[in-house]
Amino acid sequence: MLSVQLQGLLWIVVIVIGFLSVNKSTYSNLFNTPARQSGVFACALVLALLWRIKAGILPGLDLHILGITAVTLTLGWRLAILSCVLATALLTAFGQITPELVALKLIISAFIPVLFSYLVFIVCYHYLARHFFIYIFVCSFLTAGVVACINIILGGAFYYTIGEYSWHQLSENYIYLSPILAFPEAMLNGMAITVLITYRPHWVKTFFDKDYLGS
Image 1 (cartoon, rainbow, N blue to C red):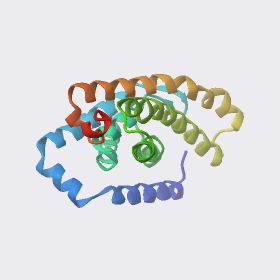
Image 2: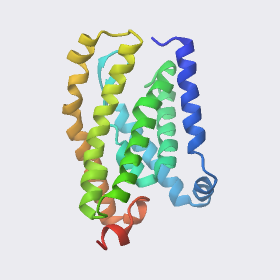
Image 3: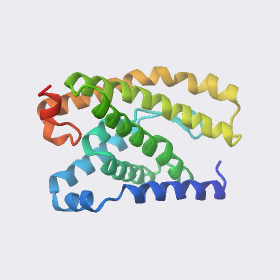
Image 4: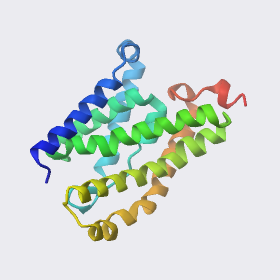
């Protein structure tokens, strides 16, 4: 469905974002910390399993739980990018994602959700009260719901822009489902982060006991 030129452009975007995510101190710590490596691979496996369970609405447009927000809050945006790449590579190797759609899936269903989730966390951390409830409800629950909607809207907008589907097809068969998927996405991510910061807060890179519990 995608031309070679368009695929090339998408891969350039993927490479640029991937390059910007590489940080010497982050990856040095990753290579020297087996627990962090286990975390990245575990998140990649969870993402692959979540993305494997999907409903095909239109060719190229699938509906599935992303789980991106929880992974981003747990690993930080740089390692979340790596985890998404590993999950996508795993699904591609098993034939769940066609090679021509890999770059598009990475951008719309992985990189943009990761960056948006981390941006919301940064804004909340600097401009809202550093409170346990804010972290759970805003940074995780609400953000994950919005991310689900953004993913569906961006996917529909992309295929509409390249002329693959009409707006009527997209609005009637795909985009209208975004609010329906938002709630389970929000619930899953919110519950995952709640459990993690309750029992294993040291696993969550963006959660700071002194800030969120001290207030």
